[in-house]
Length: 288
Image (cartoon, rainbow, N blue to C red):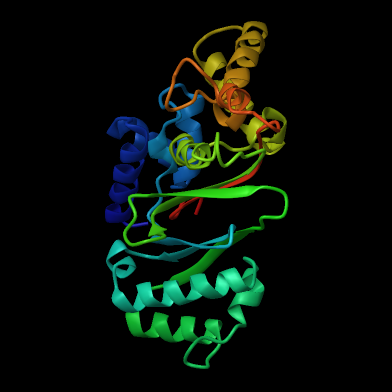
């Protein structure tokens, strides 16, 4: 790796963690230049805290939503730069794919083999668009929400056009009453976009995510000089907070910090109990 590449990695790690030059260089040296491992290394040392900056990626693109008769599909298409994400050909390609994504109920394998308006397959048009624009483009992920057991609501953050943005969240609710709590669905979708839950409740959070967070928490406490038995006790409290902060029902309601999402559902249950059946949040490039 050239000195220029090393300096670029140090700069990126500093932006992601807020940690000084020397510590970032040391972390990268210890982890063979791997950014993600270096972040984890710094957290274990107690130098860097978990922050929203750490979830940033260089990936760009668009998220698009299609709604018809209460059914919703969502699709993320990535590009390398935001410049391409604003390209007219790219946007038109994404719009047509969003329509097709709805028709195939969010199944990417099926989507890639559907014909577009020019009578060519999606996967062939993708190759042609890449060749024309000169940048890697990826049809990354999709999801479909049926309306068989509940009502679907969505929120587009900072919409670039109607149903197109960088962040889109969808929530499926059971127990909606059009006269009494119909407006709540969009507010919950907005909450999801802002609060980024990992699951509906604590039990739904992936065990591997919990185990990794617990490992980092324990290492950070031990490295701060506290004994192992005390670290175990402290880590239990911290992981409990992590589970609450990342499970939708236990999150603090963004519109009233004195209440949790579960409280809002209870308050708005009338003819039937109001329940969250499913949700999704698509943020361009997240997790890439």
